[in-house]
Image (cartoon, rainbow, N blue to C red; front, side, top):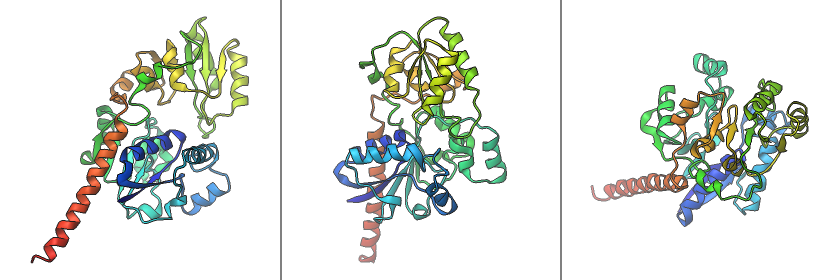
Length: 333
């Protein structure tokens, strides 16, 4: 039996990891580690200075709550066992204790724009985490990179990812958007604005401008705001009430169901725009919408986790067979 470590992060990343583990079934012994760091960054996280990242704060609380609620084996920092494989959704920081392990990477969702931070990383060799998701896949520390679509395959190759490592499988959580249409969300035929945690992650956002942009698009239609789970709720609600009186605000809830029932979806840099595209909604984004259609995750009726698990299983079995063959050769020479 193979022993596999799944490194979690946000709730989205954690549920992806869980789905893949479920598909591996009894053939593997699976353990889960909430996201962790090393060195100075570890100390910073322990002091709460990185609570705006997946290494701390609400992200860690949600992940731990999910792992405990689903009775999953938690291995803090992946230090409890010797692993045959590590599965992660984030290679911007490759932890010290997995550097010599076999690693596979799963695309977590939309990648951020190639802004000045991305170009600093590429030009001066700065740590990849400075570029956030724009630098996804650039560690080359993995054996395989499972991506959302052929469009993303092309994007990652353009950035320098080795083509032979990329596997187009689709990604869990974004490969069966049609299932969101069966929901009990009470509202229908509205304009939905999905906000971001841009300010919580110390990036600039003119929230008033965004809200007023949403009001113009709604043009008298019911406007609903779904807040990002990492957002400061009190501040966001206060701003929406001020600049979009009459709008409804949902700090929590099933975002996909809300998208399924809307007529128009407005985002900035959120992966949920792909749900709107898959469901044929009118979408607005600060990305080029034509490019988003090209990148949109493939819809394969929710089989991405199974496809990824199948390839992982094949990789591990091939290694075992190679070792057996080499062992047999020693005694037949």
